Image 1 (tube, helix red, strand yellow):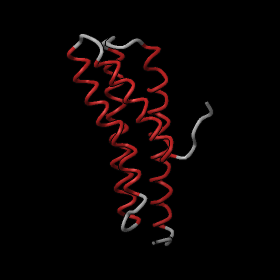
Image 2: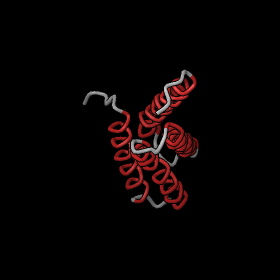
Image 3: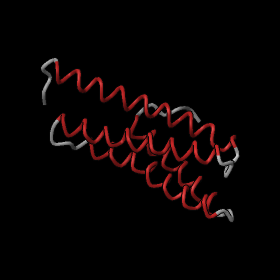
Length: 126
């Protein structure tokens, strides 16, 4: 499967992967994994939800705000993935793709925020 470049589609696919991780953790007998899995699922699915909300933002400032929330949720997701990896609750091969994808999503969201802010500075207000 090729890489999805539209951030809305990409974060939707990411949320589907987060559901897979959550289900895998729920099938284990590790209560810490259950809790971390729930935290990861919440933050990972929130990324795309905030990006969707941003599409109907009331202003560029609202758009930036929603993307900033998505960025924070992506960073939180990265924290939970790194915790799962360091604690060895899941195998590294299960997490490497998601850690890489999370970092890429953070980079894309950051670029969108920076570009939008630069547009505001240059007088391109909505």
